[in-house]
Length: 358
Image (cartoon, rainbow, N blue to C red):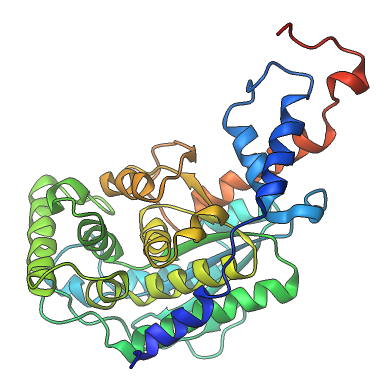
């Protein structure tokens, strides 16, 4: 019998289809006859071709952009793995709602609709304008001592993401940036990365929000202890990894990545934590990758490992380690630029320009 989370996922996965290969071939052919040396726009050409294959006949329509910021707390912070106290998650959500965070600034600048989602913040907000209340519980349990979530809680968090993907589809949103906020979530993302890719914890554990080397080593040992507790009996599947080592916001983002792919919506993973959710979605259903872009590569060492695991090239590399969806929003005008070049550039034939000699 399927668990509740398996039922949520299986319902979505069976409806995920790869983008039409003919559109991808058509896009590559068009790019090859634009007035430029063959392949000279580099990654922009890959981005344009991928977007055309996703959007198909709608590729020339303006993009309707949105960023989702999922917030939750983590019980593992009881082990002293973060430089900041748990209260900061609550305080930063209030900052988002006041429009004062980095992601607010970038979302306004680039005309991106922003939504803040409480999946598991360890605080009560009450009714607040701009906050979507989908709280499953007030933070996860301490992964070092027990599983971070039970299956029912994980299923509920996954469904938060699927509901929001459904909402994005209804609103006609065609490019989604996926961000997060949660003190302790680099610990969860590091543990997920190690368990999912088989990489030692020492290679995936970074400084998070600013730990010194002594604190980073302690964080690494906590991650090793959590993996030993939950993975000692053998390799875990992606849902069990998420349940034992993840976070409520990571589960919600995983649900969003899966369901948005189901709806043929292009997605931009942000930093380390967002990409951990994308990697889990990819491990559940590899076709998700065909709808995914990597906004940037962060300073967290595990982020590069996750991008390689999925097979994504980062659009930007700015030495960032912020989260919130900032890197993903910054990548949006690059994607728009790639599409504009594809649509508006002249071809050799239309411009009367001679092509390269073969």
